[in-house]
Length: 397
Image (cartoon, rainbow, N blue to C red):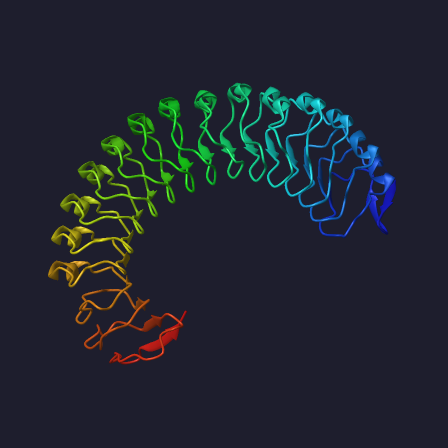
């Protein structure tokens, strides 16, 4: 038996139905006959409500309603007791029905960019939930019951006007990803150190002035985003974060770095731009796996010679400092392909790469290595004096 939906015939045993970006304002009632449907995608349409027939699809496991104009969900959504993934982002929801708590098999719930003004406490009964995104709403606070979501692995609560860090989050011991950026947090609870399974933590664009020493307990952390806060220092306990690969401390008020930073042997990207650093500790040279280092917009007057030990460094950003010259030892960094301010001596650079990138040019450049095949210049660079190696080409970005 076949069912006709939008002039197309579907077998009654169809398990997947994709009606993405069809400009639908309503759904045909016939959709309720597809009793074996497991995945239904209705994203990027013009739906304002859902027909009651959709809630007869009791075998449905994935329901994607992203980017519609839905204002309410009917209580009958509780009929979809096999649902595992529910995408409701980019709608106009102001609340959720209490019956959503009956979706006990739900593992993923996306609610970001709606008009929710309070956190639907019913969500906290979804004991199998693993991924929850409720960013870009006007929640301002989270209920204490959120600590009941013990299986949660990803929690995204960015841009919800949160003013204080909910300590109950620290009970979510299985959490691996926590994004709480673009809020108004001024401090963190010491209990954050309980989240020892965290691998990614984004606290950027808040108002943090300091970090608790317990931060050092996050020993499995691999990515830490703290940009655009008001940090004046970083706790020495940073030396415990041995698995860290990306550390973003840009746009803060840091004047110094703790010497303990040298223990971050796995660090690959370090962003320190837009701070108040006047010097770097010599131990920065111990970050042998570092590939990208951004030091622009600080108050640096020189670089330690030990920077030459960064044997894997490829990108070095130094613009808008007070540096007059680079240490001669920097020529030992053979892999570097970008120095962003050529007011320094870049002639005779000893590099193995075939591409060289400049974001700024001030002086004549001679004697570039013969292996350079491409030189990329920022598009606003019009006048330059570069003696090109044979077969080398100028390109713009």
